[in-house]
Amino acid sequence: MKHLARVLFAVFSKMGGPGLLALGILDSSFLFAPLGNDLLVVALASHYHSVARLLYYAAMSTIGSVAGCLVVDLTLRRAGEKGLETHLPAKRLAYVREKVRRDAAAALVLASLAPPPFPFTPFVMAAAALQYPRKKLLAVVGAARMVRFTGLGVLAFFYGPHILRRARTPVVQWFLVGLIVFSTAGSAVSVYGWIRRSRAAR
Image 1: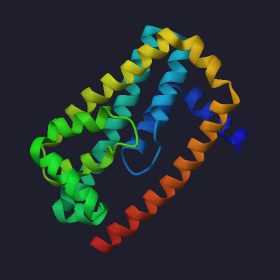
Image 2: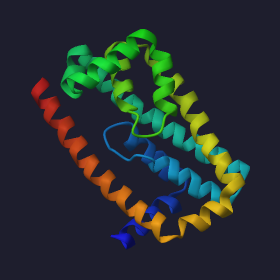
Image 3: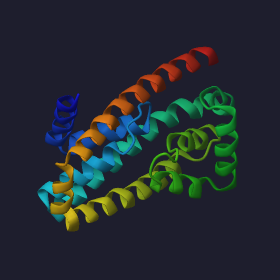
């Protein structure tokens, strides 16, 4: 499993910007990859130590995240509030819906900047279902995500050598293994639940 984690991380690392783009789309739509893009941005920015590459990686992560949000928007905007009720548990739905109705832009910014376990996709789903303008939704998420990924890249730029040394320790290696296993299981549950609820709604 440890070897598998290294292989998967190596694949995405070698893909560079396109890997960040793909991971961003998946993580912001139907799959579950907590800290996936964050860790990859940090790893790539630490390794190459270039301001131009740092901005490129942040931009590709942001574009991927926005594209994933667009997929969610296209699905939930059409389904409306009733469709939203089939995709979120009642307790989470009440919390998310209240925040979005009170100030959708602020809720989206907070969700875009906050690290896991703070939810991100449910706020995008709620904003779309409650008919928050699509252009504003994507613009707000894009701006906030760019700030997040650029900030992580800057930290990696200045503390890159230390980060790379830490990344080679057994504790971090096993953390990555656990994260991949957790993400894979979470993704499977997420996709299954999405399909089941969509069928039930129809």
